[in-house]
Length: 227
Ligand SMILES: C[S@@+](CC[C@H](N)C(=O)[O-])C[C@H]1O[C@@H](n2cnc3c(N)ncnc32)[C@H](O)[C@@H]1O
Image (cartoon, rainbow, N blue to C red; front, side, top):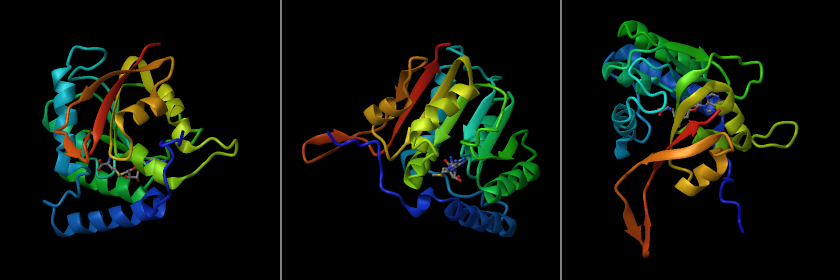
């Protein structure tokens, strides 16, 4: 059977694309401080639904208002800024391999005086040794990684290495919440679930019907780290 977790490559999988994208967003913000950039999956209200999911699950596993949170491929940092606006007040870190993205997020957080840390980091860099977090978030980042088509020297794709990144980042009992438009629910579970990181819950989105098949444009799944 065809492995549908493998995707064609695209410019959205290159660092150059994101550097250019966020350089432009930074410029727009400098010209208009109200313009804090594009929110990925805005049409599906993904950001608000991810925050609502965390709020609805306060007290479960490690989700608390003061829990530590890391946003992988944070882009313009908007998800973390919105979490702060919604009362989350633990240590927060946004990482992105695009230096332009991080310069932009730092500029926005300084202007708005928001207590969020940002770091220009490739999440697949083996020498990256971050602290562990209660909650790790991904909105569209694994999608971009999949479009890079990149592999390590040992032939493993970056998508296949993603669970190792999560294992290094999460505390025991920590939660990983991901939103994707490239992968279906079952594909995400196939990629991410391990002995130690189990699919736990999901966010419901309105579904559509096409050619007799039911589907949703995006999906969000939460995983919990057992040990
Ligand atoms: C589709 S965008 C989503 C951005 C943000 N999460 C949002 O919802 O607006 C994908 C992001 O992943 C980042 N990214 C891709 N590969 C990465 C890697 N290996 N390490 C860190 N960031 C990466 C890109 O720079 C880009 O900001």
